[in-house]
Image 1 (cartoon, rainbow, N blue to C red):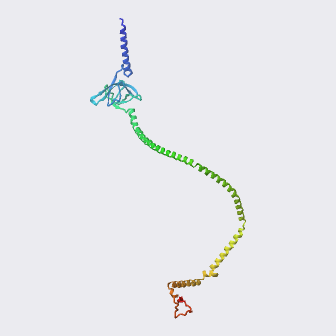
Image 2 (cartoon, helix red, strand yellow; image 1 turned 30 degrees about the vertical axis):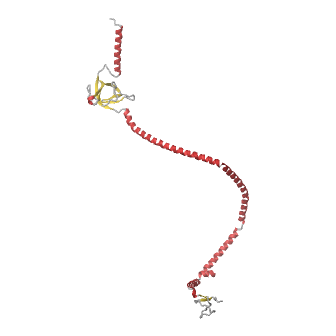
Image 3 (tube, rainbow, N blue to C red; image 1 turned 30 degrees about the horizontal axis):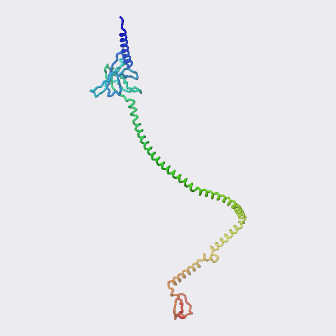
Length: 330
């Protein structure tokens, strides 16, 4: 029986589509020639997990995610069905950990098999565990760093503001310095003639000092000759005379201490000292009485009257008053 051209093309198209379907599912991990077991796990959030994502044990793919359903009667939890190879013995209490699939992104189920537990039957429930993703870990670690960066940024902003204030102050200072420089330039220009005159005076002073030096040199030479003349004096004879004078003075002072001579007797004779002291005391008493009672010693008469009991030529005895007569009739 001959097949038409159209029938051959149709059969070839069906075979190609079948090969494409089975090949695609085989690449996703489906094995059509071996029976698998299916296990379930319930998550609050699958975080981007999709159907056909791999299930791995120690980095080796042992199955895939078959279906994901929403349990609306259980607060919208996610029921994930895993298609796992039949030859893998999965004990009760095994964990289905939802984790990141490397740096490329995506999710996978990492299966931790409990080998001590009893092997679960098809349709068993795994312990659903959600592992902190790399992004979450980095976010948790980066949060304190970001806070520090924010604090550092604020401090830098404050420093920049203070720099702005400092720059304004520096600008004012530079402006003042420019004004001072301009003032100095004007001052130099105005006093340039005076400076020239001052420099000329300094030059003349230098020349005058040079002339003065020439005149001072002979004077210094004469001073040196005078010093030589002083050195040539007979200083020994002068010193000997001075020593002899000092010796004589010492002898004189020794004689005074021994009571020789008038000065010596005056300093050593106690009786003489007592007499002189008594005379001084009597004289002091007489002067005191004369100052307090002058009428006892001196009488003034303006009319030439004389005392009857005292002759004019009678001597005045000590302790009596003397009469002075002043004749005003002549």
